[in-house]
Length: 219
Image (cartoon, rainbow, N blue to C red; front, side, top):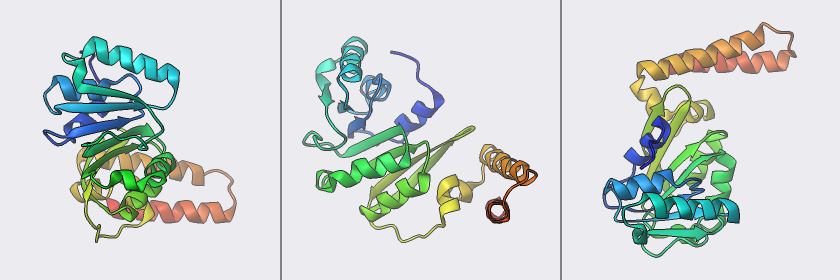
């Protein structure tokens, strides 16, 4: 089985034991392959929406999984064709707006989905707020140094409220304040301070100063 990155390991670690997981935008299939071969999932669905990546995905799963019959490869757009019984959905390595669009396009397909795991590489607040609106609460969060935040949501109303900056940098990570995460925040502060040192419109400088103050409060 191919060795997977620390980011993908974090995603795999968040999948509940015994889940039937669907990996949307599965790319090389590393996550579903790991889930099957490690016995975390008895069955998986790997989804790609373009024929070339889909063919590559199917070849990888047939070659690398010990029991390819337990993997369903789908040429599909997002969650529109989730297999019956899927209870966990993974959306990793894409922008937060795309994640929100994929889930929002077919909310009826999520009726039996208990767990959603996302790895939003941009627009994190938009992705998290979309999950809240769909009736999911933030259950777990993993920070992968030095830039990735992986979120697991469970079915249920989210009663907590966070501002956009906290959503951007991880609400649960902010509670734990692990050393690597603190270094991540300090680096974000340094980047903003470097921008302020340039000649910028006063409005932009004010926004950056406000963000620096809020980031320091997270520490």
